Image 1 (cartoon, rainbow, N blue to C red):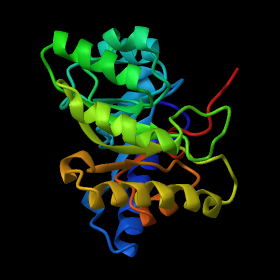
Image 2 (cartoon, one colour):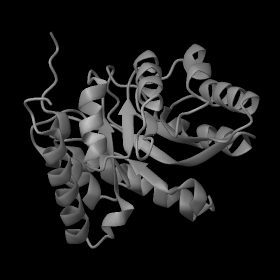
Image 3 (cartoon, one colour):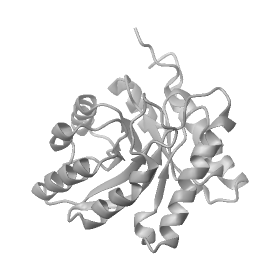
Image 4 (cartoon, rainbow, N blue to C red):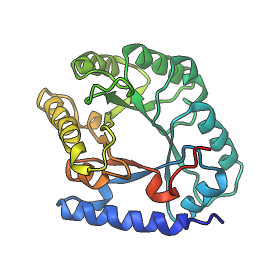
Length: 238
């Protein structure tokens, strides 16, 4: 058992997410918590799973595969759903398409093509989100907003992908309100696509919000929030 009460943290977060959704006039069931497990070990992750976590998010392919395999070998009441939330290189796609529940970070036509090809080899539909870099930060990944039409076209033309929505990251700030313009913009882009005739099945999700600003993200329409620190405590970088 870790010194931090991970199970209690998750339950408290789930309560606060439900309250934030209700306050925003939304059904709490519309918002799922992606527990970000970057740098966390299987024992810590198991504590979160025991408290009711279902969706786990990883930033690195090798780490995700290792943890997936370790947890798959355990007798759990329910196996978690793995979300890839980091930058995905095309040469790493083959390692995750057989089990990844949702790839959040699809940011190029070439990546769409590789995911489509590899998912076809596995004879499965790979769920994906299109990631945009709305903040235009050099340190962040994601496609520029002006490339969204070609990403949408490629996703719709794919044979083996299930495109489910959009994803973005806001610049880090101690003030949650600083993230609002980016989250509001992602929602506006979703609405614009809907107005242009894109089916609702492709606009099910907005993946946005983290520990510091998830309540703002929920107010702006997030359906998937990616939270690590509020569950597992501050990461040890040493």
